[in-house]
Amino acid sequence: MRPVAVIWSSVLHVVLLVAVIVGLPWHFERPRPAIVAAPIQGVIVDQAAIEREKAKQEAAARQERQQQQREERQRREAAEQQRLADQREQQRVAAEKRAREDAQRKEEQRLADERAAQQRKKQEAEAQARRDREEAEKRAAEQRRRQQAESELQAQIAAEAEANAARAAGLLDQYMFMIENHVKRHWQAPLSARPGIECLVNVVQLPTGDVVSAKVGQCNGDDAVRRSIENAVLASSPLPRPPSQAVFSRSFTITFAPDK
Image (cartoon, rainbow, N blue to C red; front, side, top):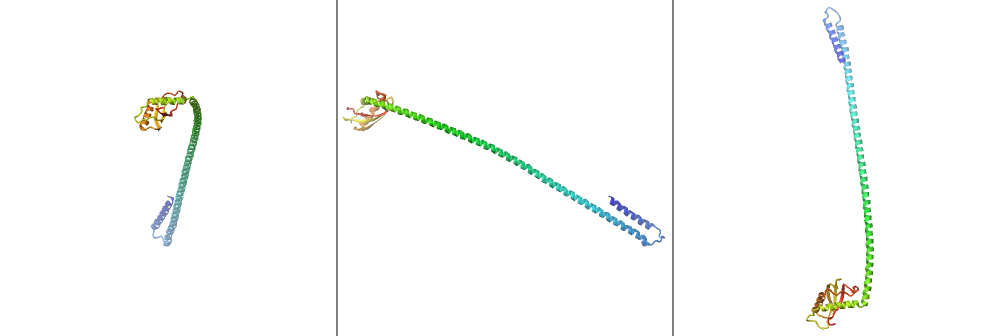
């Protein structure tokens, strides 16, 4: 506002000066060029002042624009720095988050590996215990089998010894004779039977004497004779008890000769 006031003040002075000059009487004789030269010189001086003032204003405006530009540039630079700082902070926070997540995953994996290792150890221990138990059971079963085999062998030896003793005493022959006579009493001779029949009969019986099966082997009779002998053995069930258990046998062979 101050430069403008100076300009208006200069212009007002010029106007007043011109008015004074014009209003003077004509009888004053002064050289017109001198009178006219004074205002012209004043106008030139005032115009230069105006120019200077204008230059000052332009310089001030230019300085103000430059100041604004500097301030704007500083604001942009500050904003850019703040943006970069925010970006670095975000990156730091993201890196810390990734580090925490990685640490958590590693910890979870470590715990999972420990659980898996413990589970494997448990399974291996259970498998070993099962193998040990199976091995112990196998050894025990083998021991029982050997003991049973030894017992059976001893029993078989004893039975054979007793059977040999019984045979030596004639008990086996006596037992076979009892069975043969018992079967003869149940035999019904077919029409095709001829004197001198002699057949070998394989017999299977239960400990109770009940006959399980009877099969004629070597025989000099026909099929009717064979069937009649087998039926006679089946009809003889149960067979007589042996005079000694030592001569009992589940399967044996008798000679069927009805004429003897």
